Image (cartoon, rainbow, N blue to C red; front, side, top):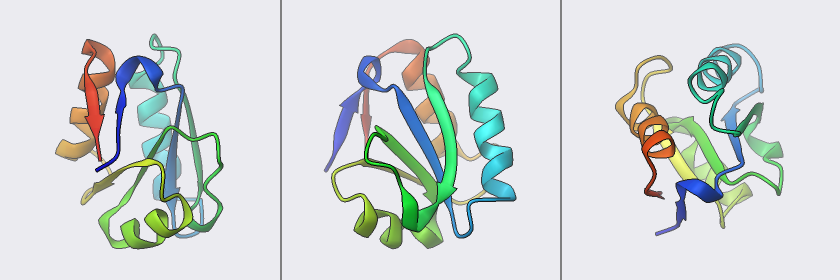
Length: 102
């Protein structure tokens, strides 16, 4: 299971099927929530996850494609775009410190 210390997270990528729409909303929400944490948040198509991503956030339905494209990254799958517990836990861990597990 991949993991990363919160202090080592510098870039989060929100990956979706086309890299638009719902992922843009989630990326904007994460940017606002993490604005004081020095963490860059981007959105991208699931097939184009950049190599410098530390954490990949994507809908559970795309998790296998995200793992295939970025096997060494911490992957946080979620079910709902706004208010999902997995995303809330990620933000909380980054803010308070600790380990983020895939």
